[in-house]
Length: 213
Image (cartoon, rainbow, N blue to C red; front, top):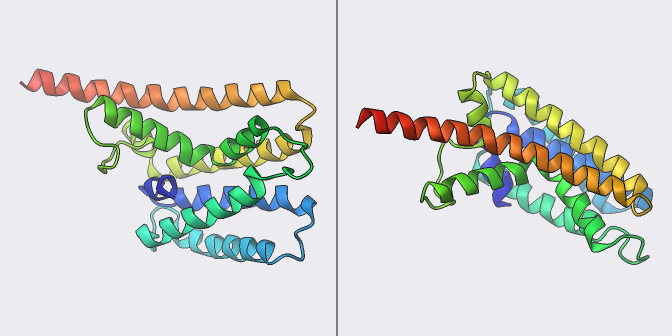
């Protein structure tokens, strides 16, 4: 819930992440015969609402989500992720805890990586992770020269990659444990990439302040 809320720091980003998460959950859940379940109805309705909202939320945005929207989405996505990702195939013992954890982290890769990067930087800065600021992965891409539209498209690409990987992951678990390791290495690479980008900017700010003094 907090990760989705924290991700709502630039036009379209939380909407993009939420759409990719819901698409992943629908694609993963349909084989489990929830087509006649009220859950699939709720997921599709929310996906449709986000799709319509995204038209006006894409930068430059004409409509904004706000904390109420992002916190509701965070709670909504958390509930369904527990039910259809974390508890996936748990009754048949087809999955291990590590497999289910991989599925959750893959689907929620965008908000989790952003939250992890922000938390690490704020702790290293001696600041509470709960204090807001323009130090998210989105902001660091802008500092690097990206426009807000390019940032949105970058996160859209990451969201699409999460969807594709989660579908493939669902197909090959638990028979291909090597594939799970490759996924973790890929997610670690994305995390290190964003973290190193943010650390360079943090160090630049620190050096500028030192020179000013």
